[in-house]
Amino acid sequence: MNISRLGEFGLIERIRRRVRVGRGVKIGIGDDAAWVTNATGSSLVTADLLIERIHFDLRWTSLFQLGYKSLAVNLSDIAAMGGTPAFALLSLGIPRDFEVAGLDEFYRGVNALAREFGVTIIGGDTNVAGSLIISVCVIGTPPRRPVRRRGARPGDDIYVTGTLGDSALGLRLLKENPEGLRRSRLARALLKRHHQPDPRIEAGSLLARRNLATAMIDVSDGLVQDLSHICHASRIGAVVWNERLPLSRAYRRIAAREGTRYALGGGEDYELLFCARPHNRARVEKLQQRAGVAITRIGTCVAAAGGVTVVDGMGLPIPTLLKGHDHFKRADRAERNSSAL
Ligand code: ADP
Ligand code: MG
Image (tube, rainbow, N blue to C red; front, side, top):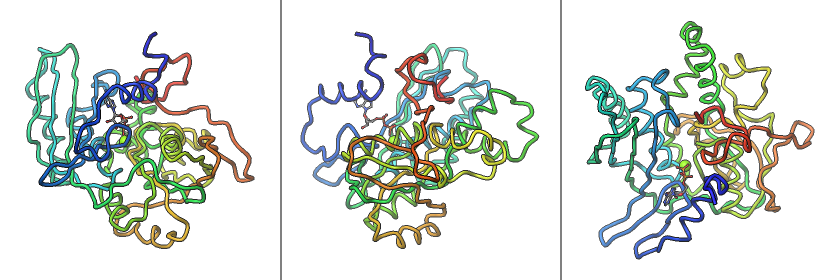
């Protein structure tokens, strides 16, 4: 059987069943980061792989942006557990003809973000490859109780930080009209979101420290898809209010006619999606200021293990065509998310 039939989720589940869980693993495969312990303490650990022409395209991404983003996506996974990043291992597969100046630019981008979040690059590996391959592993400090994808209960509120869909919309604009883009301030705002996402470390950490989030994930593959991971892990369903989805001013101006399509299914937002008990509503709302990011209530958890339902203002379900990313599914089966390829 070909792996494209399993899909990314099925593939990881198959791997999970085949690896042995040893001592010291408090959280293993299946969350945004693992939580491991040894005699002297515990750490959160996460890794991500970025491959040229699949995850990024050097025709419209600068090496500075690529360095920044390679680290940002990993910090986002630490944020999703409520942790604080500390160290990173960065491994590169580099084509033989790659320019040295480009490599310097890449590390300038890495360092810009690393400095901002107090992360030190402690090592990695380097080898020659057919195209640029970047693998980053981040080690972080956990909160007392890391927040998992499981833990949400029926009746919990569903929230998201920041705004959704900007990154995927930015990428679409890049592909369609890279020249026109630089002239528009709104478009540049979308591009910034695509190239240099803000990992929501402070929000995640506050939610964990105050015990407010019952489940959490970062939105990397699209809201509907990532919420369905929470549903699956927590054995619940979710209802999302389409009209409450937080859209940026740039999104509203540029893609008004396309409604919430990019907010629901576009990938690479790197916002935090979390659930909280309704009696904590005021406390969650208050957090916005200290976290430095808006937090919007977008739905509610329900008992049925029926996945995610998006409803309109009348409460009627609306079909969601764009379901988010799965790099292993073929384009003819799952509509491709704009950021895949
Ligand atoms: P994210 O989108 O947050 O990076 P992924 O969907 O990539 O999460 O991964 C989900 C879970 O599967 C994580 O716990 C990750 O560590 C694990 N995982 C992914 N690929 C592999 C693999 N090849 N072997 C073992 N675990 C994996
Ligand atoms: Mg994640």
